[in-house]
Length: 183
Image (cartoon, rainbow, N blue to C red; front, side, top):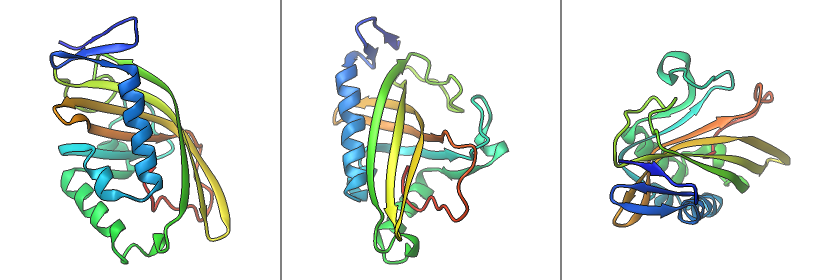
C-alpha cells in the first residue's frame, strides 16, 4: 500500500522514499535533458512507460487520447523519439537548442490514478511539480512554464517513470513555436 507521511516521504513498494530522493531524481533528470543525454534520460523510464504533453486546452481529468495532445508516446514511440533526437534527422534540433530547466514545488500524492489516465498500482505513486524551461534557438529566447504530473516507481536501481506528463501553463503557443525538444 502507498502511504504519504506528514514528513514529506512516501511508503511505496515496501520502502520509504523521501521527498529529497524524489527532488534529486527530478533535478538529475533536468540536468540530463539540458545536456541532451537522451540515453541517460531513457534510462529513467521503466520499460512500457509513457511520455505525454497535452495540448494547451487540456484540463485535469480529460483523456489525452480523446482530446488531443502534442505528445502521446507509448514505449515504442518513446524509443523512436529518442533515436530520432539523437540522429541528424531531427532537423528542428540540429544543432540542439540551449535549454535551462527549473523544477520546484514538488508534491507527493498517494493515488497514482488521480486524473492520470493510468491504472493505480500498489507499486507506484504520483508526483507533481512546477517547471520552467528556458530555450534559446535561432536567435529567440522562449520560456515554457507549466507543471509535471508523473507516476514514479521505486526499483532496485532507483526511481523510474511509469508516466511522465508535462502540462503547459500557456493559453496557446506563439506562432512558429516548436516542441521539438523534451519539456
